[in-house]
Image 1 (cartoon, rainbow, N blue to C red):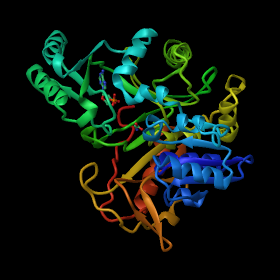
Image 2 (image 1 turned 30 degrees about the vertical axis):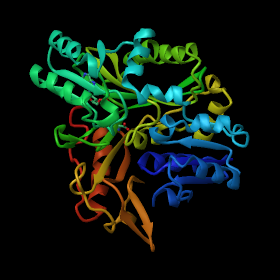
Image 3 (image 1 turned 180 degrees about the vertical axis):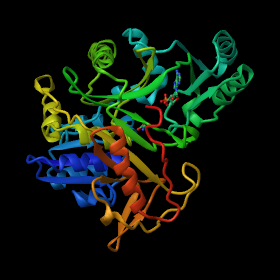
Image 4 (image 1 turned 90 degrees about the horizontal axis):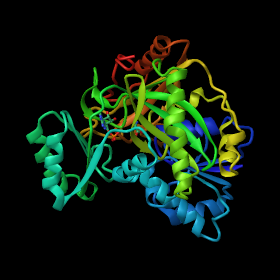
Length: 422
Ligand code: AMP
Ligand code: GLY
């Protein structure tokens, strides 16, 4: 089988690493990929939203299946583009249609979906510019802290959690006036859920589904979960408090009604669902849906999947997922993200990375790197994810940290407290 992965981050390198282990794989292409994906497949310099460029590549290389990593091409309709094209419609895309991608592309659509299918989530109400007065009154009825969410994609920055009522009311107005551009022309005001977060990953073919390992990620830049939000600074799987009974609740109360809801609405959805959850007193509540795998969660989730991933993706395309079992590695996997100094603010790129050949006992996934003249250069804020297995979290993290020390580039920073709250 010839497979094309769309994307350029640690998630895509982890996908490429996993798919490359399958005896069913013939050729693997990654568009655009990074220095890590280049070691397991062929990178092609085509942007993730360049649908015409992707089409040409699929036809030239005889691609049999496409896996979409990030949300942007899904929200832009890459799956529908394939379906509508007479030359491409036989090539399955792992990733939902545009209608399915709206579960991530619009917080309001996701919340309305959850309400319609009785999926546990916080109370909410959505406002637009001419209902700002109603929005402020709604805030006044809620208890602090106040949660304000830009409806559209805002690069992970569109959620504000504010303690003070007047400030929250002012921010609601600012958001509706365009604080996050088009994304905040609509704002979801949501009940605050107190608890501990985790994420659950599901692969569905629209009828059946399989549960993949759960994970917990660390989004803030600073130790002890302080400072600015990032794409993710590290992750752990399994999550110790997510025992069998809790995960059963997630499956029964959230996963099944989500898939039933998609079917009921006749939404074409073959792909991953990433459910952000709050564990509130032992009960799961949905914070958000993402229509893809997480990054850096994938760097701990896929190393725990023993089943052949090409087989799972083929079964997804052929609607045979309900026949599949996923075998898991019972060990713990941790990942620690090495980032550029200054990230998530401004940072410098194109720094030489050394020490990658010294790594022992971890798997290195490239997040933001570029190969050049035999060297590996930094090309993003998140640079390298160091993933490790262990019999427990402590062992896994010790291996990740030992190797994190060996990899060098100017300005390197990482959090040394991943897993501190578990
Ligand atoms: P989101 O972009 O929806 O994942 O929100 C970003 C982060 O804000 C989440 O990972 C949570 O930490 C927090 N958050 C979002 N919604 C809520 C909520 N209703 N209650 C508590 N925290 C929330
Ligand atoms: N790590 C969070 C995300 O991928 O959205």
